[in-house]
Image 1 (cartoon, rainbow, N blue to C red):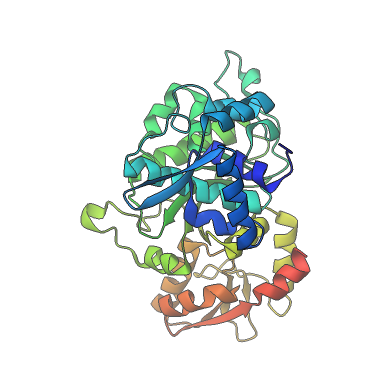
Image 2: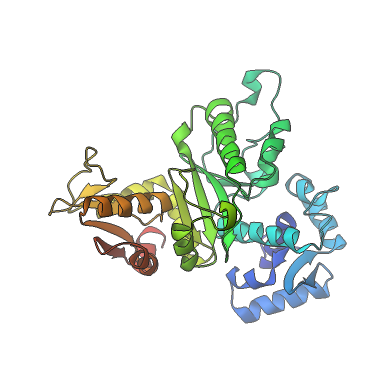
Length: 371
């Protein structure tokens, strides 16, 4: 099979995901009729099959497909398709399958945004520690790379401390470290202690041991994916639910960005991974603003002509938006949020009347920054 075909790409995505949800098929490039033929062809060649149970439908690889991929590129697929691992010996429990589906959705977004997801294409960052400190140093991250939760738990025994964490993986860009979650269409469970241990571990392993010359402690941030912008509103307003066991803004991350699992989220992810384009965008947004006022008791990225604070909210940084809205209410002061047009409705619903909202046209943005 040709390596650059859509069929081959689909097989690779299923391989590292374990099970790809049928509902995610529309996110692959091509017309629906083409994708239907693609699936029919792969089933006819006995390379994939559909697994349906508990109203959950997903695509899985057959033994034949696994053998082909392992023979083609053992380094890329052995971690996922060799031995007693979750992505190879698949279970039918709905909780396990849902987790695989959430990781699949994130893989799709990363792949479509140009992030490296295959083991043979990205730096070996999370290798087990060697005896000498020098041996633990890792090559610099020059392109965005995503490591799923099993990959970064490869660091050794210390990974046992975060086995209950809900993270689906770690995204490394040349300047940022994102601990990645996928809440899908409902608030996810949130174990505060486990998530804080994950954050502390990333600060130690990446910012002190593996890549101390590339990342500082403040480089570690959170990233959460959801099925729609409505989930962003639920995250902004969540109180934690019963026994505060669900996600809640509790100061765990100073920066925690929200992205949708769709084309809009892919574009935003591309932007977050490209510091030069972010700088260019913010230079444009700052055109009519005075420089940020760091003495002001309200977080801001600039000051408008009326002397009111302005915050760039296009990354949909949940804690930042919450702090900005709360500070304006506390001081009874007006301010402005600048966001993408698809984010406006949720922000208008969440923020008080003291917050004005300006929007960036997503279509024009894409034409200019990612033609």
